[in-house]
Length: 581
Image (cartoon, rainbow, N blue to C red; front, top):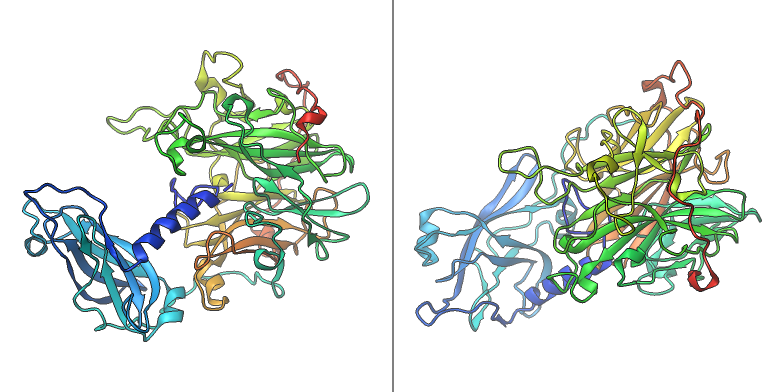
């Protein structure tokens, strides 16, 4: 839905396959040890050779770094560097590619002199060596190549290459964590073994529901959605039948470009509601983006309503505007993204209410409260939403800071007089969530969070937060650090995303409710073979330490609706022509 190297205050929700593919295609070009000519130069300033020096490898705050500088003489531009192990690239035998970086940090005058840069540039680099890479390359020699950016000039080894060794990993001390894991992990979907086509990958958090025949559907969506099917969560096997296929419609007002089905609710075994995260990719459609490749600036997000009437084996999309669920109250603006709301958690029903959350990127770009900043229409953060009618996509309302009164409006159907009235007040902590459940024994919502490093409440890892009312969430509690996960892995270049809880003992057919011993589902990505080699894992965990930290509320937190809330016109039923493939 989430995707890869794009940043908000943390990594963007969707790890977009096309983003990863484009980035690594570019990287592959830079790795080839040949000449390059990417920038024009004037006759008066001819490009010189690539030069630079590795100063050393140092340990800083528990993390090893390579310190060096690199440039192309006579060119002010920062250059890329490639790090190899054992031997240089192009040697016999060739070295092993490790990673890339850019020499774009401030440098001292002596470096400017060596670079023939009279105006002063940015030619230093300070490259972190992750512990998981050091496990593989420790005690091997370090070689660094500078990549030419101008003229018909060869890439070059930096001075000091082969002098230093990759050090042994130095994992930082673990903070206190609970007795969390309760058994071995199991691969629920391994793309190397089970994918039905190249893009058949888990690209969203896992969800499950049980149909009218008692069959469990396990879905970790991509824009072409398939499910695992089986009598139980444990026996669900990946199936090649397509559940939903995105249309990649260039008509932005149809909200039908690339859709991830992220949130499901089982109404009666046959009717299954799916809330979808629709990404309009401006770069794919002529005239809709200044760039021709994946870029966050041409990324417009709208959440959509989809319905299955055959038990979840196929989902249909109503005709516009019936497929509209919610969005920002503004139309797409070219090169002004990321823009919109993203539905990232699953629907939870408690009492008469159905709850969910959506995430918004601060918009317009570079907005804020500081001097010279333009004001934000919407703040970076999570929006709590609820409805009393899951079958009416127009009935959802957002939190305004005091109550659920925010009505979402489709900017393509009518002019919006007061856009600010149609955006939510952010709810703290929930924006890091990719899954929410209800723990009936404690009367608490439990949100699963994956902190990728930018949250201010602790190290990278898995966290949980609880709430009695879906609005007031506790400070997240650390369950397991990313380093603890990585140390359990074989050698490789791993990263994680899309964490959620699903309990085989759940009391409902949408697997909303959990006990103290659910499964933790998550996706592991292989950075050495991106973006298609992924594994969706499940692992039994213990949560008996969590709910005692947050006592159950003294009074009911979910009163019945006093009256049916106002809503937009109901969706137009889907026709056979609009059925998903």
